[in-house]
Amino acid sequence: KDISVMVHGLKGGSPYLVRVSACVFVPTVIPPSGHLSSAAPPPSLFAEVVGEWCEFHTDRPVEAGEAKTMTYDPLAKVRGKCKDCSHCESFVITKYTYLLRLDQVLCRRCGCPCTSHAIVGSFYQEAENKEWDEQKRRNEEQRRRQQSHQCFQHQQQKPTFFQSHT
Image (tube, rainbow, N blue to C red; front, side, top):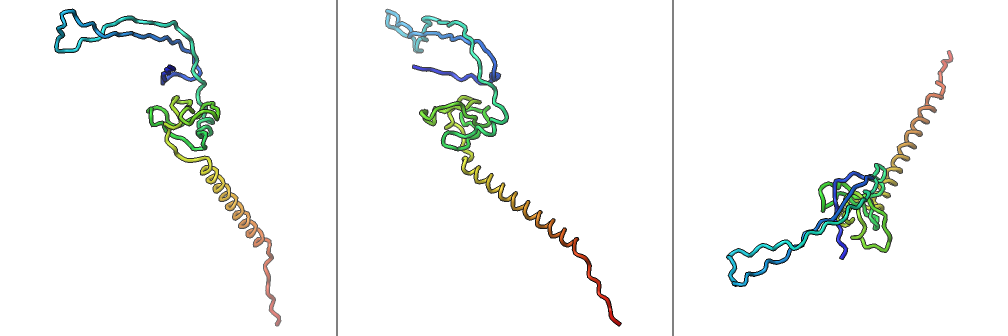
C-alpha cells in the first residue's frame, strides 16, 4: 500500500534529510491466572524500526506569474483557497496528464487535490471579462479621439464677420 505524508512549511527549492521511524506494538498477553484488572492492559512495544537518512528536494518556489496564471484545474475552473489546510491561499497546478482523475491533480503549494480548493471562477468567465474590459477600453479610446477631433475642428473654423452696408 502506498502511503504518503505531506510536510508543510518547508522552503521551496531546498534540500532536506528525512528518515522513517516506526514503533510496532502488540496486544498485551493475558496472564496465565486469567485475572485482568478492570482497565484494559496497554499494548506492549514489540520493535522499533528506524530507516536510513535519505536526501530529498522540495519543488521550486511558486513564482508571482504562476500564482496568477496557473490557478486553473483541468476543467478550466479557477481554484482558490484550500478547504483542507489553512496555509494555502490559492491553487497552483502541478504537472499532470489527462489520464489522471480530477482528485489526483495536486496543488504545488500544499499538495492537496484541486478538488479541495474552492471554485472561484472559470477560464471562460475570465475570458469574457477580459473581452468586455478590452471592448470598454476601445470604446472609451474611440470616444476620446472623437471628442479631440471635434475640438480640433472647432478651433480650425474661422470666425465670420458681418459687415454692415450703409
